[in-house]
Image: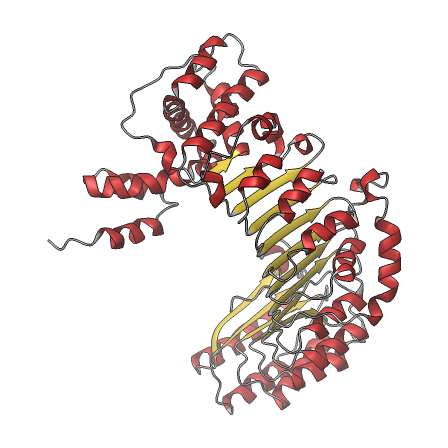
Length: 528
């Protein structure tokens, strides 16, 4: 029998880190597998909690998990809970599983306590397992993880997590090395969670590179200090539910030149504009996604912390036409929104990529794609590989110029009407793109009689070209209620099948838009 080195086995087991059944089966096979798998299972036990809420069988498993965690508590924590008349059925453990825990998920711990207390009211031998008792148990579990884990790389604070706010205030972290490895931080800031103080954490955690932040109100000063104190933030995902102050924006932009990924979601276009009006250079940014939505009920116009926000923005927005933004390494730009964008700023971003931009995704809901934005694409995106956008009668000519200029295009996804699609197909027939292997049209006409003539000319032109890859082609249409339209569909399918057999088409897809399952706000995504 061939025996694999333990390093190889560990890599194999890591591949199955989300497959609990497979890991459990392997764990029982021999001692070596057991020693390798237990650290994997306990590195993030909280990620299994949402799945374990679904069935009674899994909820029993969740009870077992909590029982094991409580059995790992140090004697002083057990005594503290005992003095509060909190008791449970403890069992003997053979390993200190907590040392393997790499994730401190406050919300996951609260969720676990919530589910267990509801599922099995007798689990804790206390007459009424009230919120303050649940909070006490949760704090002792969190404290144990901080003090006993050898390395904590992820922290998640959201919703009910604010009930643990005393933890960071009272716990001395100077002697704990576990949090010095913290890399991934997720935080939902609302009126309750904003009570948390991060002064102790700022002194210990200097290497957080990934921030995911949900801002419902302005963060407190200690959280701003936590962001400022980091050595190198690379990934930042921020969801703004209010228009932030310049002070908070400045805290974020201290890391502008270390950021490689930035995702901004907001309900005010001015928030995004403010970021780029304050700072003009993002030298290492490779991915930028901007999502703006209409949700005016969430605005907090009376936010005292934003006293300098609107005035600064109004002044800066007027000068954006004069600003030269620099994003020399930006490769992917995604724009999605339910309200009009500030196109001057988007145009400046595109121009600031200095020809490096490779993928540009624009959502179908951006109806107001104007001349200045398309001109920026034409001038600055000669190396573009993927283009997704909304095409209208007014923007058709410049879109065709873009298709002529960008000869490296590999994927095109267009949301348009039938007549514009005919023109684009004719253009691609006369000016074929040798690298193109993904073509997608989302047809917005409610009643259409899509002719195969232009489509056939396009496919016929591909026969004469030495294509890098066979083409994948998709047509998404609105629901068809009129019988003759089925005839048009059948003709298209027959045409696609003919060129599939000829080896020109790798795959084809024709579907009613109501039957297509898209990823959230991502209809035009191309799998390239």
